[in-house]
Length: 599
Image (cartoon, rainbow, N blue to C red; front, side, top):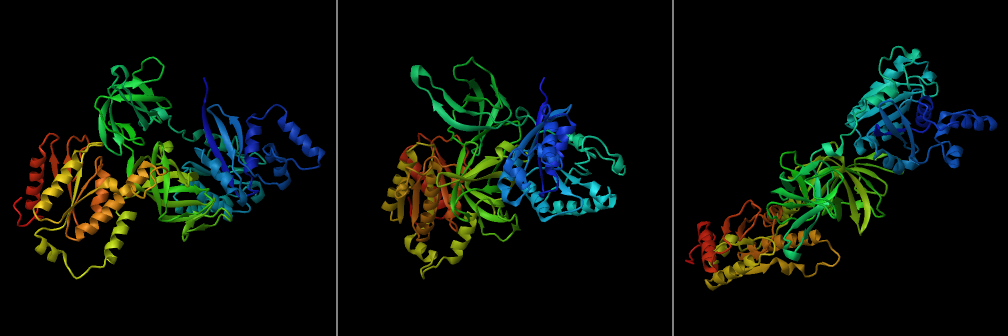
């Protein structure tokens, strides 16, 4: 039976002994290839060069000449408990990108500090990188204790100082271990030269690290990749296709789709060219049919109703690594890809940037430049379902696309409220700067015999009944002397490059344009009527914000399986047009939008 495997990254300032730690672990655990240790010692003797355990890792000739590790080396050793992959990340400032690449795959980290040299600037910077990558299990190895006569006072002072620094980064080390990698003290067993230390050896601490939970044991996460409809030979199945990222699901389970919040039960598990199954688990590409027909979009996340749901916000704090040729700037729209979701995203705030050129950290940055590591606040134009890195790592990872190329990637660490969203800030600024004429809304209402109003009619996707009702409402109000105007959301596609832009981008821009237009026409005192089938709860909320300080009047027509919030009037699918228009007009009178008209 195979043992579990764990990835560990080791980092630290150049020449503080990272590679020596690993070399000694390989040698003392018998993990080297037969004769490797003797071969390296013989090579050193022939070249009159003192033997170093670090030479066991230096696979490249250039690395030996320079005396620094310039790439992330992977090496393997075993204990009785598990198999380890140690990622030796470079400490030289030119190779931050490689360090981030190595550390991003790790479940725990060892950070090496030279007891004699003490805490260096790069020691702090590497601690910062580990905090930004989100590694929680961190152990500090205070190396070269032989050079300070195994002094307990030196060790404890260094531990107190560095722990205080890490506390400011939100990192709490599991422990500090005093070692001498070259002498082998406290590496695989305790040291008689440091009897004052009663903690575990490095090897024992590695075995004490907590392994990530197996994906199948985590809550269900099934990103919807596509929906397939079959029609041949009376086949009416709608198959929800994708790959189960974590968890397990069975026929009959109640599931929820996010961010729409729609619910159903699993009717069947579908597998291509394979025997029928009743369940699917993490790692399996499969499909499902539902007991209730739902209109779903690719990019939604299916979860079990009985398990914790993912986060679902537009605004979150993330750490990202930027590789785009052009800097990442605020207010520009990029594309964020997480799971199967594809949504427009903006850089809302830069919290801190770690510069790749000199590893300096700044809180004053206005852009994220190439190879920078940044803690920042991102905001999507629509809610997206995700998990935090500390909960389900795979569903916290994202990439950002700029001009059809991957320009960055990162992990989500914290969900944030949307009270200070970019949209709200835009609306506040717009209203603050709004220049009014000398004709007040009350003056217009007195002349027009009605107040301005934004009326939205929506129904199920593809249902054109709401458009017919909206046009009928416009005609009836206009015939009665009202300043009424109908505008279809489809009219806004003119000028949008729908051939190259993603559907989500086009829809978001349509909503923005419609809201701004509604704000102007409502302010002019008109009754502005629009029809937009397939509106979801978030899109309605966006429109309501955009037409502020006026209120939107929302009418739902026909069948809509989603329970839309904030609906003022629901009209039946088989209701006569004249009756539906009369209902709307009665409600407009009750709301004191219409004054003296008896419609």
